[in-house]
Amino acid sequence: MITIEDILETNRMITENKLDVRTITMGISLRDCAHPNLHEFCRNVYDKITKTAEFLVKTGEDIEAEYGVPIINKRISVTPVAIAADSCKTDSYVPVAETLDRAAKEVGVNFIGGFSALVEKGYTRGDRILIESIPQALAATDLVCSSVNLASTKAGINMDCVREMGEILKRTAELTRDKQAIGCAKLVIFANAPNDNPFMAGAFGVSEADTVINVGVSGPGVVKHALEDLKGANFTEIAETIKKTAFKITRVGQLVAQEASRRLGVQFGIVDLSLAPTPAVGDSVARILEEMGLEACGAPGTTAALALLNDAVKKGGLMASSHVGGLSGAFIPVSEDEGMINAVNIGSLSIEKLEAMTCVCSVGLDMIAVAGDVSAATISGIIADEAAIGVVNNKTTAVRIIPVPNAKIGDVVEFGGLLGYCPIVSVRNNWSSEAFIARGGRIPAPVRSLTN
Picture 1 (cartoon, rainbow, N blue to C red):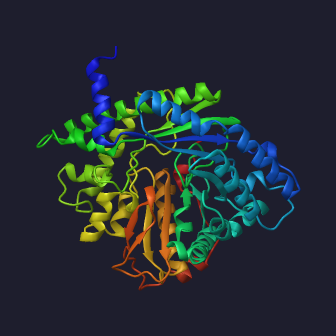
Picture 2: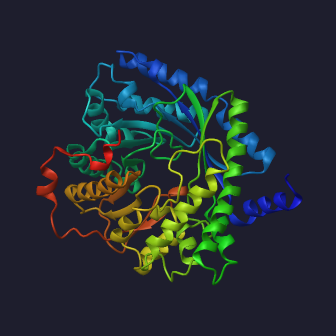
Picture 3: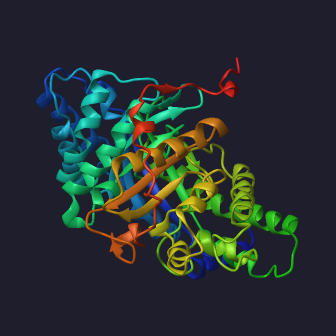
């Protein structure tokens, strides 16, 4: 039974601790849009998206107004374009990206994801065209997000694609240099990418219904507030408190997901339990870790604190939703987290420590701005390292790194909005990875992949 105290507590979470539903993401299949003529395919895509998502934004706004729960973003994810457009007789998918952008603007969403390819075991013709099109596509559009899954525990790591993605990132940065290389902020490189992720830039949909609603919740400020009353408590008590708090946060997401699904007449997919921070003070994952007793995020013990947080969020949220999926854990995007930004500024947090933290968080190296002279081979080496962590540990990892042209250590780059701002993070670029990355081929799947 819901009590007055429960209602008041939820209200406090929203008004004082920045609890929100970070996104309602509508997943739309483009499989039935296939056509060998690129123009016809683009027309099919535009018509399907604008018809299917016509009332998505209004529905989100209505639910927000009626229930008093902030819904920050309304987004769309689609079938990976490399799959949907594979039959098109063309050598560029840039027109497809431009069509996605027009459709997204027409229905009023914040972002559209799915300009994507899944190449962990090799390339199709469509995959090659998609990847080659990424720099120009992200430079020519505002709302399109792109992703490439180049590794999995079952398949190993596609090192040919690892090499290529370092070069793609550098080209994307150059083409969007007038906007602080913003194109790279809309491109994420995955190992073990989930196919029901509602968060950008990595949202896409395969193996789902024709149309689904996936919801991502967020509430780092709520968790930090709950821990403020536990000075001196042991870690068992901290874990229990986080679990209880995550349960309450997820119930809000479940309510919104079910209501959006019902009103739109669309199947309910999943609730993603992730704690997604923002650049605003009081909405930081790093500050949760510091509340556990760390002087600064990045100090020894940070990885252990993050492991506890990630595990407790999953355990608490699992019981609060009928379907849980996506990434579900704690995000550590540097530019989107006020506490992470501070930790980089004071020198407590390095890219090496961030890599260690990705072993236990729910994604990977996220929204990290680096100097423009960091080489493509070095970026590819970082991608390879991060993919190896995901493959060996059977978890999702990702890289969203932004080599900002002409930027150097000491500079700060502004991306705006939820993407925030970031001091340039130092990268060990004195020793070359060139010969290693040039080998190509595939790093085989680990023994743990043989589970049948």
